[in-house]
Image 1 (tube, helix red, strand yellow):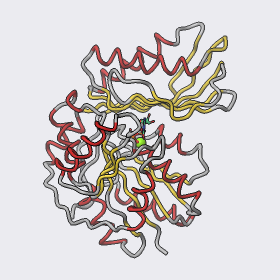
Image 2 (spheres, rainbow, N blue to C red; image 1 turned 120 degrees about the horizontal axis):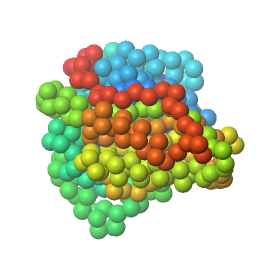
Image 3 (cartoon, rainbow, N blue to C red; image 1 turned 60 degrees about the horizontal axis):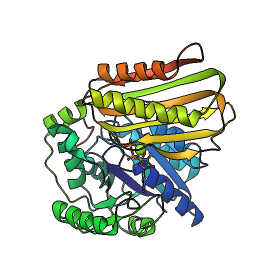
Length: 356
Ligand SMILES: Nc1nc2c(ncn2[C@@H]2O[C@H](COP(=O)(O)OP(=O)(O)OP(=O)(O)O)[C@@H](O)[C@H]2O)c(=O)[nH]1
Ligand SMILES: [Mg+2]
């Protein structure tokens, strides 16, 4: 039987990776074989590092979104099928990407409909995200993403009250004119099976045509600064790696806020010399750090890290804030750190391989 392909889109930090992982784990307990595809404008992803902690097969497509790297997506899908013969593949699009129906789903239906059973396009929508901090162009991308949804998942439903949940459900269904809205929490698991069952039994209609103004879309992507870094940190005495990472994210939040640079997502994955792994995220300026992976929290004197920042900022400002905070938080001679790779850029204008 052809593997089922579940494409997940939606804004940065909306909860796509967490949902894909929770869902994959549930499907595995139901006896399914699952594969995951991650995607980014650059390389060195926290998401990939996090997912690789699991026994699930993961393939990363870097250097551009699925629509601009469509041949790489086909290659990744084929490779995944060859390697593990999955029953279900989750493919997470970059959080600044839209127009997925025209540039990915319709081409797949035209060229690969006998290879993959394509589920309706799901867009993750974080009802706690305040997009008012972002520029008009970034907000345009956010709304275009939701407009093309064939199903919307309202994420993080463990946080709002029951009344807030009901109101968001009503408002989102009404604003975007869609009845397939699934409120869920990937943390408590509530609502995940309802969405998954729909994904396993429904097929992408791909009938929605949304008008996308590629100039505004490109301006929205270009308003974002993107930084991916990999490095190592050592200290001449043991320290709490969780405290270090928490301070790192909060200090960046303060510094970026001082420059009116709203955070879309800051995330860090690290591994200590004790082979313990951790991952934390901050998805909103002034928000709270959330741990998605936390081993014992024991002190360490050495760690390797992957750090990703997506912020409405120039790359120059973003890189300078990141370098400054690392230096301030990890002063010599007590600490020594180095970036073994660091890239910082604006995503370039989207140029999809196909648009149908
Ligand atoms: N409380 C709560 N937090 C959640 C839930 N789902 C995701 N999060 C948190 O939201 C943060 C971002 O989640 P991700 O899954 O990384 O979001 P994403 O959409 O993959 O982000 P990008 O890949 O950067 O676009 C993480 O810290 C998650 O723990 C949820 O259901 N409840
Ligand atoms: Mg993700």
